[in-house]
Image (cartoon, rainbow, N blue to C red):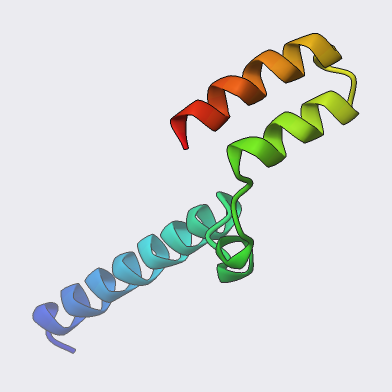
Length: 72
């Protein structure tokens, strides 16, 4: 076999393994189309969720809601 043929095959293996690593990184970081189809929360939904989880008080919720309503 010629030297050029062997170098070509070696290069193709490198390309293959690099593509595999890139695909694994992409999928590991949430590159799945299922995740992207999920709608994002609106600011009002985030505020309601934080109130429900007890992260903010009712008074804080009302203040922030007024600010959000002014922006709309």
